[in-house]
Each structure stands twice: as structure tokens, then as C-alpha cells.
Image 1 (cartoon, one colour):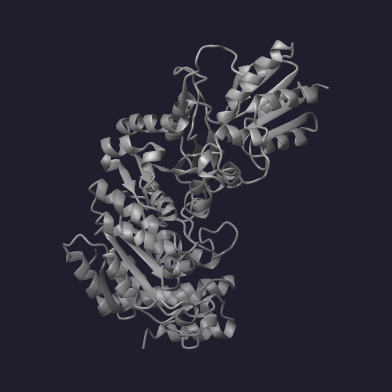
Image 2 (cartoon, chains in turn blue, brown):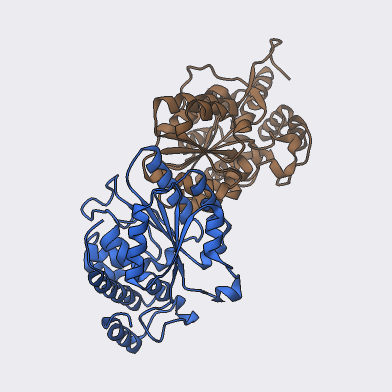
Length: 277
Length: 315
């Protein structure tokens, strides 16, 4: 954990959003909506909470991050580029031949990726394996995982959840990016999640519910969890807005996996520069 | 059709895995077993009792077991996922593809109940497609040992060789062919007989049948080259090419004739443009409840059929 002010984290979130949108714009391909909903959490994790070292990405005592909703790779790549895991110019190469920034996170090609993801529902199981190894080896590291709300329709998420509780993985922190949209429509239309927080609680997690765009709330909940002494894995349901920060993308289903055109890109960069309203 | 009157020692190859993994786990603290509730029948109970800190049981949740194993592997562990072949291949195939093969992680899948060996469990439990499924995924190695001792050696090699691997064992007891000092190398066929008239390439529980068939053929003056092709991927291409000097090949496997050993050998034959093959295996049909022996007979996986197929090629 680093001492960083809330304003600095907000500023980083602006840079992250701009980098992610730039990536998708240059590639004319990718997933901006979910990248923007996750941006503030990613800022808090990468620039304050996680102990990681760009000079030594495979440092064995590092905190791990698993992007189970792998299609929002641009926002994680933005963090890796800003932290110096890869040269910043890599943002110009998303989804191109030879790029470390594959369409979905690839641990073989990109430093700082702890596990390859892209097929939904699977990353949380991998995070459980990492957290379990940490416990067995008496390591101090923690494992942060981010799952999508639509992704929680996969049964494997709940298989992983029950395992995390059985093995008392209090070193596992799961964020649900609850933006309420998926490719075909709202989560309520496609497959209602009911009370996602209560579901995790019923599985035995310690749960929290926050505004996933309030840096104050994100950092406060992370402070609280860091001090927690129970043996429960943690789940933070982060209420977010898909496309957050770009007015025409906000809460619009179609911006799940579409790239902006020149004019849209210009507008997005301008709006993002002003920070969240 | 036993060639000797002495009783033949038999042991299920799942016992070979169960015994070897305990030995390996004691030597190397990074060896883990990930059980999916059926540890008792997959023979991992001793491991669980003796090495609880290296053991995980995820319950009846194969997909999670696969992902968890991948997570363990990223930290340097060497997890052996233990379940039945039908689940260890098909139920977790995509998880293994995405989280073990694609990132080339050191995950092993060690499965009992391969092929027709779970006879009376019926067609739902007889894994006849498993080796074919994994043969088509990049980075994967696919192995089935012929007996107890060779299985132990191959499990040991798997533990000491980096990369995702699928190992398949028998539920039923099968005859012991090798003594405990025999050495095996993943990807390298074991030659059991040198011959010049016909080549038989078998793996797993059919190697003993092939051995008996070879002895029958020899009695009739036919010289047989016999290979135990325990690894079907990577296939020992060189060994198959050597068989092409004979040009007449019979393959035998307790697996669907599609995409297993016979298919792998056929690919080499076709590419080399010479040689003839007869494939013996499960006839692209589901099984049913019956004894293992009866099911093998129904599919023509018998000593008699191996002998007849060899003679047909020689005609």
C-alpha cells in the first residue's frame, strides 16, 4: 500500500480512462463501456492498494490482480502502461499483431498480467488458486479479482465462491463491477442477478456495497478490509455506470464493444479531461 | 489366450498414480492434488492423509477445480487434478484450454476410469473421446501407460516435465508387463518386440492384448514389431516412420477410433505416402453397462481381432 491522496487517484483515473478509450479508438475494436465502469477501482488498486513492482512483474510476494471480465483489458493495460510495466506507446498497439496488448489479457505476452483470461466465469477460480497457495505458503500477498455482473450468471463463479469460503481465503478480495448492462441488454432483462451482495454473503463472504465511482468510498472500503481480521473472503459490490465519464456512452448497451469514430473520440477525450462530474 | 499357465499379476493403473503421487508429494512440496470429490476411487486418499497441506478438495465442481489448479500453477505449484476421464476431459475442457494450455501452465490432469474400463457404470462413464479432445489443444501432452509400473514412471516424468499434461488410467486391474526398473520417456515409444512382417502399435490397457497377439502370430511364423505408444501427443513420429519400413501397421487402443492413437498414426502414414493401417478401437459408438471384457469384445478390441487384422494386412 502506498500513501496517495484521493485527488491523485482521481487524476490517475482520468489518465486511465483516456488511455483506454485511446486504445479502443486506435484499434477500432475493443470494449470501452466496461473499461470505463471499472476505471476508478483500477486506479485505487494499481496506484495505491496493490504491492507490485513494474521492474519485477513476477516478484513472488506481489499482490495479484485477476481480471475475470477479461474483455475490459484496455483499462488494465492502461494501468500497466502508466505504471511502466510496458512502454506507454504500447497503448497504440491494442489488438495488433505482435502486441503485448492482446484482445484479452495474455500472461505470456504482457508483463503484469497474472493469469490469462477472456472466457467468462473462470478467473475467480484462478484467483482462488493463487490465494490458496499464498495461505499454504504463509505469504502475505493478497489477490484482487474483478468480476462482471453479467459474468456472475456463470455457475463457475459460485463454485469458486464456495471454495474461497471453505479454505478461509481472507486474502481474496473480489470486486463485482455492477454496471447492470451486458451485451444483449440489461442484466435484469437477460438474467436477473437478484441481490448479488446477499448471494455472496450467503456463500459466506464478508460483503460491502459501494459507489464504484466514488474514490472516497473505494479507498475507505479498501482501508477497512486491510484492517479486517476475520477469516472471510471479501466481496465488494461496486455500483457503477457502464461508459462512465463519456456522456454518450453512459448506460448505453451498444457501447459494450464498439469503438468511437474520430468525432466521438475527440468529444470523449475532452469530457474525460474534466474528470467525473 | 494366455501364453503361460502361471497366473498373471494384475493391478489397475490408477493404483500406480495413487502410489507414485504420494512418493512424489513427499519429495516435492510443490506437488499438489486437486480432488473433485472422487479421491477414493481415483486413489488419492493416501495423499490426502499424508500430505494434507498439499491437498485440495473442491467438491463436485470440475470447472472450478481446473481454474484453481491453474491459479496454483502460477505460483509454482504442480497441481494434479484427479477425477474420472470423462469429466477430466469433457467437463473441464474449455477451462483447461483457456487457463492451462493457452498460458502454458504446469497443470496435470490425472484421470482414472479411462476408456471402457468403467464397464458396469455404463456409457455415461466410459471416456472414449478424452484423448482425442486433448490431442487437438495446443501445448497439451496426452499419455496413457500400459500397466502399473509404466504408469508410475510416466507420472514421475510428468511431475518433472513442465507443461500441461493429460494422463489417463484404468479403473480395472490390467496385467503387469514391465518390471519396476524399466525406464520410460514421455513422447518416446517403448519397443517391446522387433520384427519384420507386421507392426502393432498399441497403448494403455491394450498393450497386453497386443503382446499376446504378437506371440500368437510368432507361433505361426509371422515376425512382429510391437510398440507401446504411451504418449499419443507428442507422437513419436520417428518410431512410426520406422514401422513404415515394414509398411503394415495395426493400431490398438481403448478409445474411439476417431482422433486417438490410430488417427495419429494414420496421419503420419498419409503424410509419408506409404504403408497400410488397420485401426482397432471403440467403433465410434457409446458403451453400455457390461463387463469391461464384454465391451472390448463388442468393439473387436481382442487378441483374436488383432491377429486377424495383422494377417489381413499380410494377405
